Every structure is written in C-alpha cells, then in structure tokens.
Image 1 (cartoon, rainbow, N blue to C red):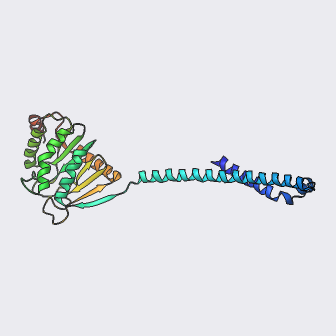
Image 2 (image 1 turned 180 degrees about the vertical axis):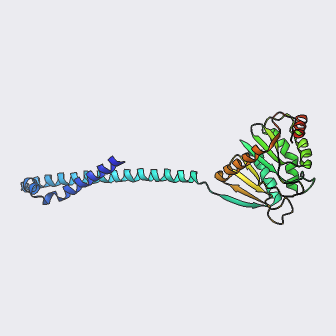
Image 3 (image 1 turned 180 degrees about the horizontal axis):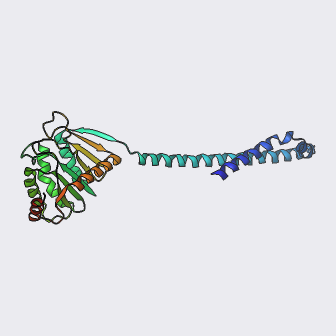
Length: 265
C-alpha cells in the first residue's frame, strides 16, 4: 500500500509543477516566450493541456483504485468482525415451547446433542402435548440419526436409575448414544446444584428448569442462539460429564447398563 501512496503523491507533485510551469522563469523564457506565432503557441498550449489532462486522468484513476482497495479492506474487516461477534438472540420459552423446539432441533442436528435431566424423578406420564410427544419420539430420533452423537446426563437417584434402564432398553444396540448418571443433591431436594443445559451443534443452547421443573405460569426456560455462548455451555456440559458415571455406552444394552449402575459406589 505504501508504493501506491508514494505514487499518488508523486503524481500530484508533477501535476502541481506542470500547473505552475508558465510562472517559472526558466520555463516561461525557454518554452512559452519563443512561441511567438499563433501556430507555435497553439502547439505549445496543446502539449501543455495534453500533459495536464494525462496527469489529471492518472491522478483520478489512482485515487479511485486506492478508494476501491480501501473499501474492499473495510468490507473484509467488517465481515471478520461480524464472524467474530455473532448476534445474540435470547428468548423465553414455556415448557411446551421448549419441548417442541428442542425435539425439532434434535431431528435436524448434524453433529451432536447434549441433554441434561436433573429432576429427582423420571418424567411423569402425561403432561403437555409437546412434552408427551418429545418423550415418545426422542429414542427413535436418536436411532434415526446415527451420524449425530447424543449424550444424556441424568441426575443420580433411585427413581432415575430405573428410568435409565428403560432408556437403555429403548436405545439398545445404538452406536451414537451415551447416558451418564451425575451425583448431585439428595433426591428429596427438587432442584439440583448443576444447571440443566441442552446444546445442539454448538449453535443453540437452552437453560432448562432454572427455577422449577414444571408448573411455571408463564416462562420456564431460556433459548440462546449464539455460537460463543453455546460453545461455552457445551464445555460446561463436558465438565459435568467428566464428573458423572457413564452407564450406557454405544452398543450397550439393558444388561450392561444394569451392571454399570450396580457398580457405582
């Protein structure tokens, strides 16, 4: 870029010198003064005007190229800025809204789905329409998407251990699903210490049952569409996963899961 600026400055200096040349004694006496006839004066003037036009055209062209180059650089920098700071969209969701949205994202997931379930009890039979649909379909969604890794963290309670055995039976033989039990508060305490996060493909995340598991009058959950936030919450999930006991691995069945659960101290 420095050579462009130097060339522009040089061209501007040449243009300036040519413009004031009629007033420079040496040029005036040796070029303009000898042009005594009309034809010689017209010839000198035409040469002068041609040089002026050439230099002006060159100067304008270089300025336009410089502006174009700077505009491209500014557009690139702005694009990099947008990529680095993606928009943050936060939405409040009711319980049924969450189940409908999350199930849809599980169906379309390309890479991974991280799921937390931190109620001390298994999902009750019945409930909202979307909730019932979610629990009736999620196992088949996992089986129908073998290229997507599904990991489910479940709070370790006696009631949930029985439910995990049922999940293991439904997912028996799958090679893209894992289940782990996370020890948290005593099962008599409704809310866990750990924050229930759900993450799909590192692009969207949900904070679920923040203040209560069910019965919220208006909103229960929060959806966050932002790669940076979703990526950090996925790391939080990984940290919880490392502290949990994996009881169902790809290819396992009910028997292997029962053995793994019984081995937890």
